[in-house]
Image (cartoon, rainbow, N blue to C red; front, side, top):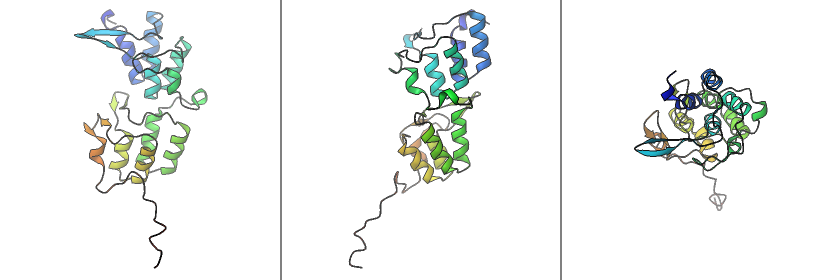
Length: 200
């Protein structure tokens, strides 16, 4: 492994959820500054996100558990996003099976499982609905884009109510979410007017 790619190869493995590579690099190269924001210079100096923040935001919980076991601090302040890893923890992180949550949510949307989506959003209130995810090197659409493309407007409203943004950029489609919104779509169903039937 080329020295010049370290620690960027490690951070890239965290980003894509490649636990085997994360473990191999860490164990081969020794301890990394897991609680310090690294920087790199390329014309300008760029601040990198804490590895644990990246793992939790991407839903790579097996990687997150490994990082914590290696000393990543849930309360370390990430200077890149201004938050701690703890703020991205799902409610049942300690008992979660490690499956990719984003893929699980997308599968529920594809199946039109509105009840499953509602249960997911209740269980994982911190799910990053506007984050572009790459799982196994494959780019996935934003959940709201998928709901619109499948014609599941009920699920779309549910996602919007839980923080999905119409102006989020979908990298896979190279478009804004709003561009998939059908004409006449209302983010929330209009409440019936109790007065409209008076006098009829």
